[in-house]
Image (cartoon, rainbow, N blue to C red; front, side):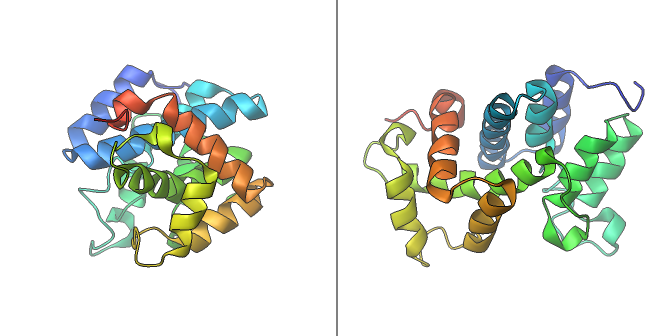
Length: 197
């Protein structure tokens, strides 16, 4: 495939599954994909291009979880190198690199800004849903997520500054952004394991 050819979702999904064994990490990537597809529709962009970018943004995390000996072999640089060899478009690769602030790659495109904005937020929404008795994202809204955001002990691994700054950089209101991403996840609740018990 040439550098301007978009891979199929099936091909991307197969590669993601090859590199990612963790069910929770796979579901995180599905959630980010759902949010990216929703934002692509909102901004009038290519939903497959944005969706596949979201789907693949962490595919290499288990193999290179930021503890490698060389920056070219850590997440996401190691994965981007592999995706580049497979002909993934450069704008997708730049967005994937840019979702990790430590990569030093600036988020210039709307797609890159959206990926950064939804990445940590999907984790917070997932955690908010999973502490509900029903374990359903259908019982989550912006207000409940904001309430959980204030509790620093809750979902400790979620970077709250990234959530806030991501919305700002994307040019959207934080509460609106949280609700928008929550709604995107509700539409895919079954595949995210958040449809309830």
